[in-house]
Image 1: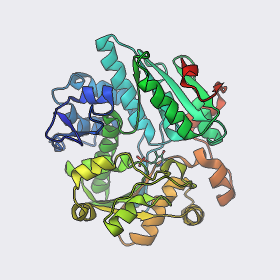
Image 2 (image 1 turned 120 degrees about the horizontal axis):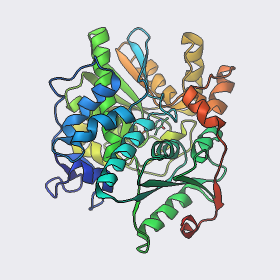
Image 3 (image 1 turned 90 degrees about the horizontal axis):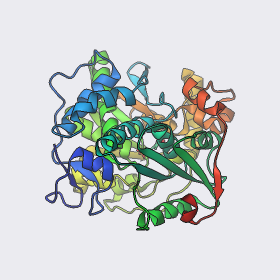
Length: 417
Ligand SMILES: *Cc1c(COP(=O)(O)O)cnc(C)c1O
């Protein structure tokens, strides 16, 4: 199995390991498989989620130097449950039982264990730089904590990160350091870019959501979950996915192309309407993001769109395969309230976007809404709406008990080294 860049599909070919270690293709494009493989013949649900995910990922590593280690990496990375909240075929796939209580744990953990294995073989070290305004930094910090040959520097903007999210960025020690930057998220990103451009610094890398190592696990849980739904109900479901940079949903499109039993895929977005407008007008116009209650989806120029355009190159093909609806902050609040009152089901603001789209557009279909984060992460938003306290899952509870440590710095990247 080889990979190519979205910007030169007939150009140079790369292995999965190359793609994982470098992140971005040399021409600035994103890595995609040369051809999407089929789900293996011996695919089974009988050995649990992690094993099914391992099987779905196996063809992507055929002939790769990680092939032999893949089963062990998957067992270590996917070490938590992937349950459904079931409601008569209108189910919710809960992807938030990892250490930082959001779906990003799957990708970040797989990436960390894969990089560790590759660096061990090469006897090299890497320092991962991450600028974060929310969930990414916590998932990356937690996943890379105590991994050999790897260290992490997390940058976040002072006073602009939710309290519990900040805790997940600052509770680490050892090989993970956090920096509270006196500036905005854009300043943090700029510092990371400047560090990458400084030729006197070497051994730096990123763990962006566009990395192939983060995308493949997101494909794998859709193969698993759609097969489980089909086994349970005998039918294929419409998957409704709360989306921002569309990495999670790109995983679903790859799973469907592999033959996973998915009827169709719907992107639920917040007030950042770039994708629904593209579907309406046929004109793709990326733009600056606007702030919403579902802040991990505040994206106006989704970074994985290049991968979707590679699959669906014309607006007609795109419309045949992608549906998308936008949800306002008022609708997010109303949906959290309705879901709690009617089903005693507490959901986060991101998941609420998916649930709103189900209620308004797919009420007569078999559907799975993807729950991207645990509501306890967004207690300050959700608790006043539902009028009660949200129980904290044990992994998140452990993190909340740890002391905070962050270095306060200005906007000069030299302070990081
Ligand atoms: C990152 C994130 C999203 C958006 O996922 P994309 O892959 O960027 O589309 C949605 N919900 C939560 C809770 C997230 O952390």
